Amino acid sequence: MPRTQETVLEIDLNALKHNFEYLKSRISTHTKFLVVVKAYGYGSDAKEIAEYLQNLEVNYFAVAYTNEGVALRDAGITKPILVLHPQPINYRTLIERCLEPSLYNFNSFNTFLEVALEEKQQNYPIHIKFNTGLNRLGFNEADIEMIHDELESTSSVRVKSIFSHLAASEDLNEKEFTNNQIEAFQTISKTFINTFGYKPMLHLCNTSGVLNYPEAHLDMVRSGIGIYGFGNSEKENKNLIPVATLKSVISQIHTIEKGQTVGYNRAFKSDSKIRTATIPIGHADGIGRQYGNGKGFVTINGKPAYIVGNVCMDMIMVNVTNIDCQEGDEVILFGKQPNAPEFAKTANTISYEIITAISQRVKRLIIK
Ligand SMILES: *Cc1c(COP(=O)(O)O)cnc(C)c1O
Image 1 (cartoon, rainbow, N blue to C red):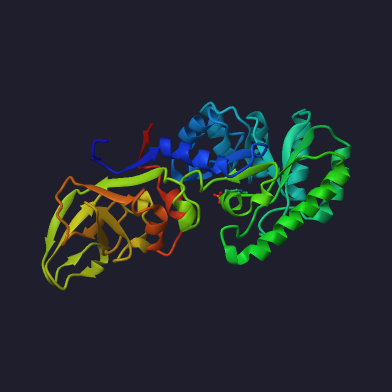
Image 2 (spheres, rainbow, N blue to C red):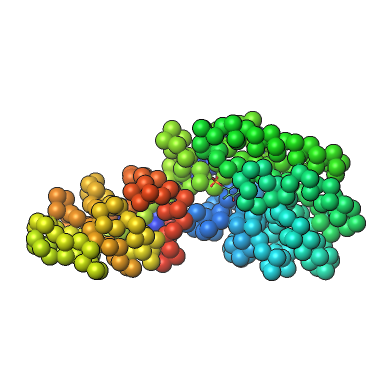
């Protein structure tokens, strides 16, 4: 691996394969696997991830919005794509590109039925989402009767799956709550099957559901964060490999005398002579201002160098007083060591937020 000369996000496809195989090993062979590639594949590169996984045994992809699904179709992804939160204004595009909507209330459901009818669709696959406690999106059990009544008079759509989403599957202190969600979904499934007279695909588990609730894998699981290398616990993180590594380089080194200041608004005032390194990555690249002023750190030659002063739009300055380094040296923000959860923790946030925050300005480098 030649050392980097600019800010890059390396995407390790071998790590991706490892994570996929590990997660597959945790489910039974008759459970299908959906990979969530929303938000640019959790900030990595959705097209590369989907292209690579399409040739392994992935059954489904999911994105949040219609335009994300369109981008995957443009990239030649042919597997089924579930759109978790499409807006009705995009239903026509969604149908044109063979994307499958999640419908979660009568507004989304009725509008989709009208569009499917206008577009002369037959048995168009739809997915019905139920609320079991997250209280974000979803129908209730009591709505099943009416959903059924509305579908009786049309063959333009067909319910391919029903699903729900766990609120706290990573938190073992919330086991009772999660078990109640699982039970609620089972009740909903029974009512649905009795009312409709057939069984659609049933799915409930995200990554932590896969890892912590094997009894709830049902017909399919939906994994995002685990595929990218994080298991939401130290134990499970050891079984997975972070796919993305964010790297940069030292542009310039400064000696700061006692009493001098560093960066905008003179937020850092030095009380001794120190050495700083300027790194070409800033809040426009996804390193938020909350990492500034001594909270976040980068790693240079194996040692932590804390951010000095405010994070700028395009740069940070870090304290390298006790680090043997020079201009042109490589800088690690997160990757295998430290990993994204460790990096995110310095700013009181979580892996999901930091990895999806890395902006499109940062070059993606695919490692095969
Ligand atoms: C994002 C999302 C997932 C993936 O969750 P992870 O914790 O990243 O595995 C699964 N299902 C739904 C409905 C989602 O929105």
